Image (cartoon, rainbow, N blue to C red; front, side, top):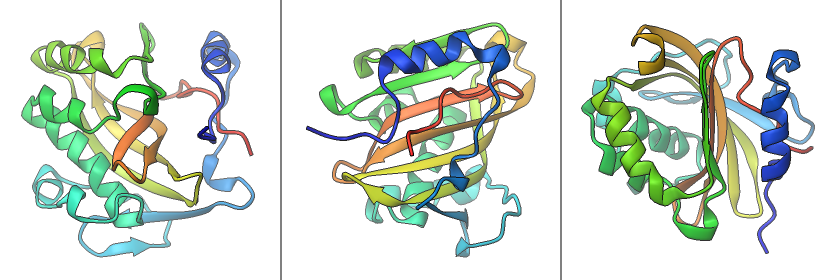
Amino acid sequence: MREYAFVSRKDHLAGFRMLPAIVLLAVVGLPGCSTTTTDSTEGPVTSATAVRTTPETAATTAAMNADPCSPSGSQSLINSLAVATQQGDATAAAALFADGDNFEWFSATSSVDHYVTYDPAVLEDRFRQRFRDGEQFELVVFNWNGPIQSGNLNFDFEMTWTNPDLANEPGDAWGKGAIDCADASIIVWSLAMKPLSPGPTRNG
């Protein structure tokens, strides 16, 4: 049985009920974890300086041709999701997530809505509707949170989120997730508008 570094689905939902009292705990500071902030053009860097990506640089990165759990490969995978939102391509966006039992959850939280699903089969329809309404992601900062555990890589990020629930006014968001290294697919995705928390942090 796979061991995930994230909390259970039950605890995940419980954490969102406490959103007003939750302060995001920095995953990058957990013992035994290293963090690399990556630049889409120059590879891994160790600086904490925010690196802004663009659709042009992201679109030229071949995520599936790289090690999906290397610093550059994992960032490329998340860049590919951002590009799919900018292009309104729901099929491409949904294809980046794991199928079946490998998938854990997808959640997105704003000041007016909290969405969570544990069924990857619904993602394409959700993306299609949301993209039609103007939803887009732009990756601003990506943090690689190694080492790989039980075949999965944890990551966190900052994004500009154009959210239909908030009149499509771009806003600052943060989040975290996990990648299945064998399948090169996203198995956990938690996104929240600042200053809300994207949910419970992973277990140490």
